Amino acid sequence: MKKNTKPKPLENHRNAWILSVAAGITSLILDRKAFDPFNTPKLICILLLSSWLMGHLLYSYRKEYIKYKSIDGTILIISMVFIISMMVATIFSESKILAITGDAFRRNGLLQYLSLTIILLISIRVFDFENTLKIYKVAIFISLIMSLYGLLQISGNDFYAWNNPYNSMISTVGNPNFAAALLAIFTLICFSALRITKFSFSIKIIAILTICLSLVAIYLSDSRQGLVTISIGLMFYITFSLYSKSQKLGVIASIIFTSIALLGILGMLQKGPFSNFLYKESVSVRGFYWRAGIDMFKEFPFTGVGLDNFGAYFKEFREVEYPLRYGFDITSSNAHNTVIQLFSTGGLFVGLSYLLLLIYVFITGLKLVIDSKTEEKNIALGLLTAWIAFQAQTLISIDNIGVSIWGWLLSGAILGLARNKEQVSVRGQENRLKKNQVRINVFQPLTSLLFLIPSIFISYQLLQADRDLLLARDYVNPAITQNKNTVNFFANQVIQNPLAINYYKLQAALFTYEMGDTSLAEQEIYFLYKKDPKNIDILKSLLAIETKKNNIAKVIDIRLKIAQEDPWNAQNYFELCKKYIEIGDFEKASSLKKKIVTFAPNSEYANEVNLLPGLN
Image 1 (cartoon, rainbow, N blue to C red):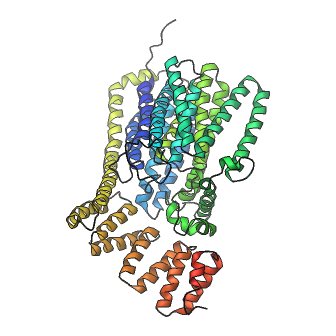
Image 2 (tube, helix red, strand yellow):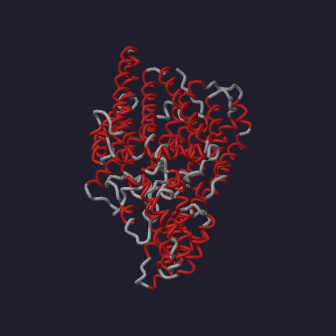
Image 3 (cartoon, rainbow, N blue to C red):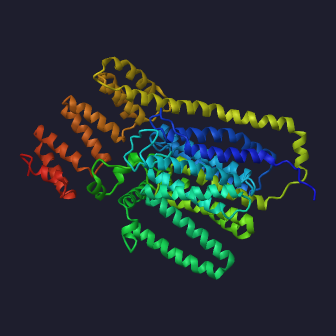
């Protein structure tokens, strides 16, 4: 048999390794010198990766024409609608820098989704059944590292003393739920690898070890999210495997597992026989986030409230029961459901195009598994199972970059395998490439550099803002007066940074205020207020400043503005009521008393307001 020496387009072997390893690095990377040590470095990682790969993507489109009825053409159209809609939503966002870079400790803005979309598109062109094995190998290796680090954290021997209010098992993604969900996805990939004959015995042994360590870490993390994610993935995998052998067995399994899944969902909502095992308040509370997000979408159907601006509007749209149950100052910066988050912050076209993308990947993946045989079926089923698990956790979770990159990479791999099956080589194309070889070889690196240079500038500014803010915070100590200049220097660096979000600039101004430079700090905070009048953190900072100055008129004005953005805050109304009494306006004070007693009759503020003098 003649050996096939035809070179693979796009140097797929190398790019498959780059994509797989970069996904692993993104999940692992953190920066202890950054104010946000987890999300900012991960954003920078995918931004630089996608910028360089943009040259490869355009090069591939140039040398191979796209048929619009193909997988390439369909997904390109969906992706273009998604990104253009996001750009439009960014234009209509009140805080455009936040929409572009993403909110603090989230980074779910335009840059993230643009980067992930590019990674998806290039993955489709890179991955075939041979190259996809690299995803398995990297996932097994990264899962081993993350599970070992998670267990080290649980044992109390972490390398770093994180300021962590959660369970200690946060691994390298900053939260037990994110860590457990990612380990669950990796566990399913490891499990699927055991049935792939192309993997050596040693790799399968490592996969088994990794499964055991990951399951222990997930269990000890006390995260129901990880256990549910694994369960859903396994049920899908087993059902499809049985269906491949016998349609009857597959149908029976699907009925059984669907029933179990429904009981599991009911248990998470504190109903049914599994409620004692699956219910957690942190899962139940998500209903408030979802309903607030849906209401935001209804109010702003076409543009949303602004990319990653959920936190700026949550208190305005939250139900009255939420603050009564969890506290008047408790808030959320995310809908904890990716689809609702995108509809509420990006509007109709962002949400619909994302949904269409999910549906297309799912249907294509199912068809791929059904049409594949033996080894190819095992590879495809493993990827689709991990993808299903990823999508399951997005129903109740935030779109964390360290986790999300795997969802988008898996999407691209699934579509890449399907494309590989449908692709028909165009005759004469290879000759055309040879004639233009010098020009094309220059085209890719130059194009990559064209995109990489501005991305390096953006990455530098993002990283610098995080590092300057952390340094300013570390030097804050009013008792050490010689630190004042140092704090002011780093704080001013943040304030002058063009890509620093308003939250960072506010924190920088507050650090200078704490060190005694009050006039400049006040000036900056009022400037931020003019740019971002809905920001409750800014309003609260102004409130603290004016309260300290005993400026009653301004305190009342600020509290009225807070009431507009946070209409169910009994604490704010109570303090406002006291100020009205202080200036002798008992009519307005009495009106606020009735409001507090009406919507928060069992709160401490309802009891305290009844003790205030001179009220009806």
